[in-house]
Image (cartoon, rainbow, N blue to C red; front, side, top):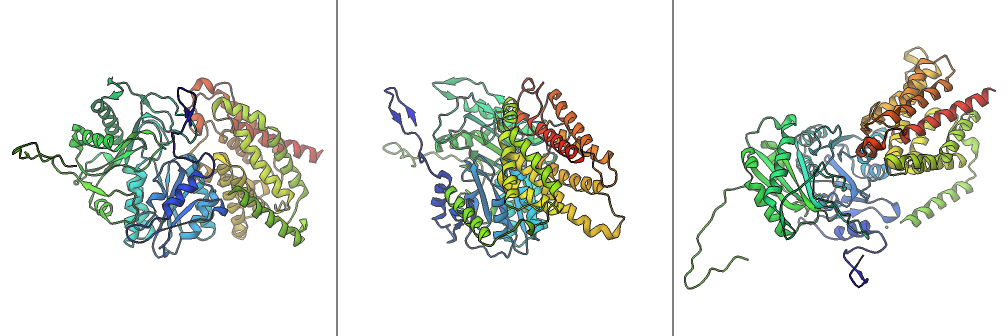
Length: 621
């Protein structure tokens, strides 16, 4: 809603004032058949998940799953159908879907041939899809994952974003899977397409969130599909509100070619040239798209590169109604061309069009001018209450799970510290992020505490305890930190359990050695999906020193909690001197906002180890 000069409210978006906008959008699309007669199935609203699955899927080929936050329509649900995606997992607006939703999709579609997850390179997507893949493998499912990072806006960015190039991976991998290729081949080709695609976007202004005014912004080059600030603010001559499209396209193409040339795959021009995809970010008219196409095809650098095929211009991966576009380049060979040309069912895929020389004719003008060609939170709460009521009727006792009072006491100490630190951590995060670290960690603490109170944690079995904590954090913590820590505990639990089966083949390890090996493995998997390393100004800067202290102080069955707490505190305090963050939202924050303030995630980890040390000292005293 907005207001006109008389103060009256004006409707300017076709959205519900309240209710499930995303669910309504998916519901409408799922009621239409594809041209081949196939259609879609949606997960029941009561599940709290938004899964879109082919209704003709037989589990006899490699399945493809993609997804992410909503607001990018038609991506990704619009590309579910024969020859492209088997399923899409949709999150809230600009928010990654949950681990449980991705895992549910894997269970629904994965057959003997396995499943490939195609994931855009955003922290939340990497973490949630990555942890789901780990858990699916624990269940015996055959799963591979390809991460698409085609953004070339920032040359020094260690984690380029996943943009519209993701759709080319969908199409090519989908064609190979439909042709009977195995998971290894589909994954290899998908990874090659992901690694060789280059995308750059620009916009005159950003998209409007439902019910909110548009944020005033100058035209930007290299902005993200969530409205993240661009790499460069554009300045060009305008007349009566219209920009110089020729000059604008020149800046976009020049930067795109430079970024593409930096990629190893972009060094040699394939014999068949390149594909160009022109993606409307959501707010361009059909007339504007046609002008952009003409300017792109006429650009000398793209002509020299050899543009032999075009996808678009169409809205393919949008950012609500962002008034902008992106260009994607993909080097072609015979295999990729055949896959791109293969038929597919989804209506949102516009097909590939060959580029031919422009042809003119002179119309006859005899006697006159020639005529010109013309969804569900309450239902989930009820389901949980029913489950708890059944457990009460069955008389579940605390002794049903192995217990350890000392472990439970230390766990409670950690949870109490995190709950008490909520305001402090939120305040610290507001300086360098979005002000929710304390809320996030407290949410995880409440989820674990609830499980503890409900007798659902096996405090006397370290492997099962870590498995349960991992599940609770994935469910109740939210945010990237929740998935990161859930990945840590899940992977650490897996390693702890395998240690028991390996014990017969080697000398028995001490308790400290077992803990260090399991946690080190868990941290490694967390880093694999999260992408952060020591010195990136993250929770790892407190966690890794604590593990180093554990390794240095291992003495039989004794763990030196005090040494670990000191190391974690020193690591957390050191983040206040780090002027550049390379992970999380603070990576986009100026250094002046970071200096003198601890990273909130590292501070939370330091407080956890201090609580453990205090509890250990109290128990010993």
